[in-house]
Image (cartoon, rainbow, N blue to C red):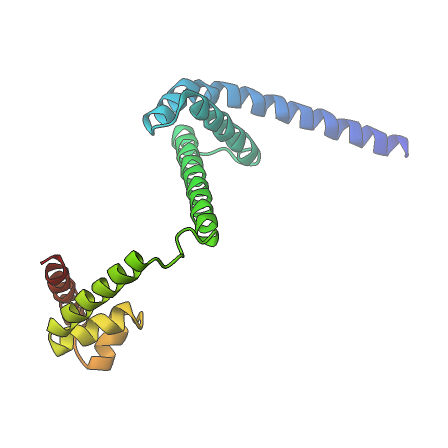
Length: 185
């Protein structure tokens, strides 16, 4: 390497260290001061002390990494929104684990075994539902079928039946209410 290249590299390193020092000072002065309030906010969301501390650290780390190039205008709002999103992500992930557990149980055939009691209960429920659907008007039954079984949108059903989407919505609402009442009776 030439002497000039070494000199340029040294200057760049000094500039980078100076930028990091300025950024670190800003972070400590403007962001870390919210740590106690952030922990309290996370605790108010129903997290245990240890989980609140972990997510507080994670939010601060995320803020450190994402604000290197440009600093947010509203530091507190950005930090608390980041923490909130981390809580949502963690709860969503926990929900997926619970779903996986349910799928594993179902795969073990504990719930899939068709006992005589389950067969009879299922047949009775089917009869009640069939009777409830037959008690509906033709249009209500047709709209409910298109929405719940064929999974069509309100607009698609409205076009197909040549009625207003609002009318489709009313038919569905009334059909569901009548079906619930019929089955509950």
